[in-house]
Image (tube, rainbow, N blue to C red; front, side, top):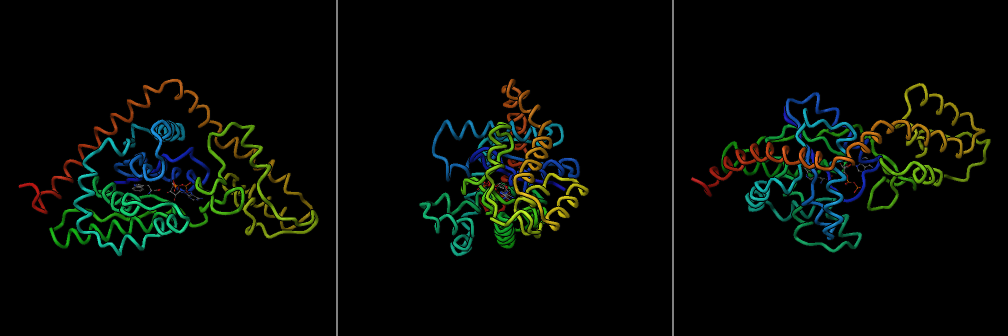
Length: 322
Ligand code: ADP
Ligand code: TRP
C-alpha cells in the first residue's frame, strides 16, 4: 500500500489541520509500505500571491511536519513544485476533464460564493490534485472530510483515462479520520485559516492561552447543566483528553455548577502539554534550516523517480511518446 497526501502552506498549521490530517500522516508512515507527503505550494498559489510569504510558509510547513513526528526515514517529504512531472500529467488529465465535473466541486463553489475571484487555477485545482495523487500510484489518500470530493474527482478522471487508453493509473481511495474530527474554531464554526478562528499548533504559549480564554461560549447560568456533546469547548477539550479525563469532564457538564473559564484553563493546560515535545523539536529544527532543506531535496529526488515512471506510462498510453 502506498499512501500520499498534500497540505497547502497557506498559513501556520492549526488544531484542525493536525487532528484532521497531519496526525493521520504520521500514523500511516508506519503502517504503509511507502508514504509520500508534500507541501502543496502550487495549490497555495491560487490564494497566496506574495513571494516571501509563500516561501516562508513552505519552509515553516516542512519544519512543522518534521517537528510533529514525520520521519524522513519512513516517509518521503517534498515540495510539490519540485516534481514538475506532475504538471505534465495535469495537462494530460485536463484534456479529459468535463467542465461540469469541476463546476460541481464544493471547494470551488464555496470560494466563488464568498466572492473570492475565480481563475482557471482555482477552477482546475482538483485536476492538479488528481495529478498529485496519480503520479505516485497512490492507493490511499488520508485527508479531512472536505477533501473527499477531490479524491472522487481523481478517481473519475483516472477511470476515464484508463477506459480510453488502458490500465495506466492506480485508482486511489480517500481515508478520512472519523467525522467527529471536524475541529471547531474559537467561534464554534469549523476551524479554518479562511475564517480567522484558528488555534495554531506552534503559537506562543501566552498568546495561545489568551485565544483559548476568548473562545466564544453561551450565556448559560453557572448552575445550569449542559449537554457536553453539543458544546464546542468540550469538543476541543476531548481532542487532547484521555478517556478518564473526557468522562470526568462530561460528568461535570451534566452536573452543572461550573463556569466556562475553568474549562478553558483545563483545555489550555492539556493542549500545551500535548504539543510540548513537538514544540521543543521545532526549536531544534529552526536552528538547522539546512537540514530541513536537505530533507526536502532528498524527498523530491525520490518522488521524481516515481513520478517520471508514471508520467512516461501515461504519455505512451495516449501517444505523446513512442
Ligand atoms: P484551512 O481550512 O485552514 O485552509 P486546509 O484546507 O489547508 O485548512 O486543510 C488542510 C487539511 O486539514 C485538510 O486535509 C483538511 O481537511 C484538514 N482540516 C482543515 N481544517 C479542519 C478542521 N477544522 N477539522 C478537521 N480537519 C480539518
Ligand atoms: N487540496 C488539499 C487541501 O487543501 C491539498 C492537496 C493538494 C492534496 N494535492 C493533494 C491532498 C493531493 C491530498 C492529495 O487540503
